[in-house]
Length: 416
Image (cartoon, rainbow, N blue to C red; front, side, top):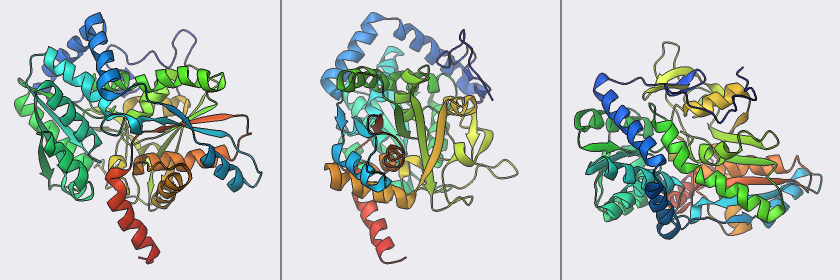
């Protein structure tokens, strides 16, 4: 177990070598090392450049639509109270990232990385995507800045996220369907990494989550931390103090890192990450590396990974394309071992139920990823007094998932 001393708060990572405690680091072919060094140097210069910050802040305000609202989900809170058996529950609030341009939190990161691409003098940007939201956000940023854009997407995700494929193509992106392996996010990431190795001189790889080799987990976390910074301010304005708990879904972990990071040094704020529990706890039936995985190297860094006894990456499953990934960001692995964040899992059935529940109680159709966090928030609220407050990161809207959720709900009703 890792513990933080007063002189070394949990927020004081990564180290100079890109470590989050024992996790993180750089495990890549030699051909990529110079590109990673260049990226880190350019990012650190940009971070201390007032002109960069001003341009990004202006884009977030006028193009992305920030700040996103903090919304009191009163009817969902009442449902949690009724379900609790005690007649009371905590107040559930939604941080409405679904209202950001393109419909998810992903745009916070891609606008920042597109600015970095321009600063490095590169004209092409590539990305991996699962649910398609990062692909859409990358295509959007590329169109805005006039960059060539290629997006790798597993063929299975192309099938279940057809709407987002259309959106990417409308904005001029080339969507490359990946037929290898399980034809999902892991395989799309593999192909994007291969592309980058062959084209690094003129191409920037805009990783979509807090995974991969240093400095990607740090960069994505920092760009997404606008979510948590806004939440701190809005919570004080809405109910006079910081929330008692913050809940977010975790795949690679960018939306969770973005809302958690500004709170990690606040011991009074409980942080809960919700992984994809899939069909069961059996290997291959879920995508919950923090709950069931072991430390291993995946896509350039050391973190918790779902792997076989001989160290091969295991098959995973989730109804949600964005959570269908066998690894997780190294900072989440660090927070797990530090005991700072509690990680749990919601099943496919729980996510589908919450998908419908939020739509019917609040008129908000969430992404299936977000629905996992809603399931945990309702359960947690029912255990807490009515004067407490839970904030859920409503990381994305569910337009992209309506067809797949309808199909899965229909199969369930048919008993198949």
